[in-house]
Image 1 (spheres, rainbow, N blue to C red):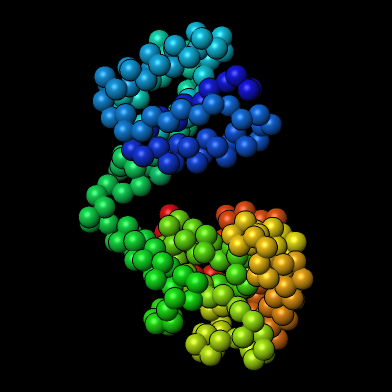
Image 2: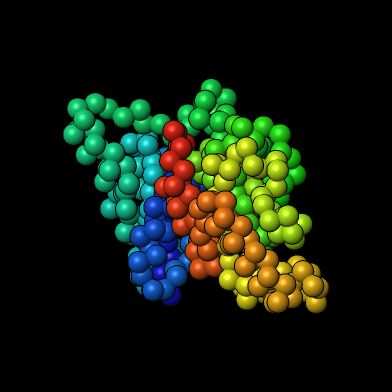
Length: 274
């Protein structure tokens, strides 16, 4: 496995091929070398990729693994022909064609997630969600919180910003995030600007030792990063969320994807973009 090479070949960005391929490869212990070849939309380009695959096969003595999302039949046939010395995992023939037969209709054979982003309502909504999350990052603004799908709250450096952006970029969710600070703990209640939207709030907490480690990387030697201060802030934030009835989870050992999935499960938005 350490000497194996994996190709991700697509006539679009290759995001689908790479996401799917990496999900499968995660089941195996080693991490092979990745080669990305997007925008392979002609026979000539496909033939060049085949030559590259064959060179790797000869050099490594093992056939490369190839995850492919190619819509054009002739381009796909070039990659899957016997001349190719790779193990080609053709996602179109594996998934799309059986579904065409099952549904009794032809798919639209669209290249990539959006055929024309300028005409895609889903793409527009995704961009709007990203802009919203950026404008409402770290409590920068309390305007338009009524249209937020979720408002993430928690102490500084608990994972609110990356989670907000992931929700926006992956699912078109308008996610604001707001830090809980010592002044809030002294008042004993969530910021007044969030009070009307408490039902939209979702909390993130984190192990104090891990929080101190993260903060030391940002501001080493500061009181902000001191372990005792981190313990105090986390304790107060969790107590506040408990009093206010805000659901929360710990980000300490969870990936952004796991955090986002838990949030989506709980808030159950009317629509998601994929």
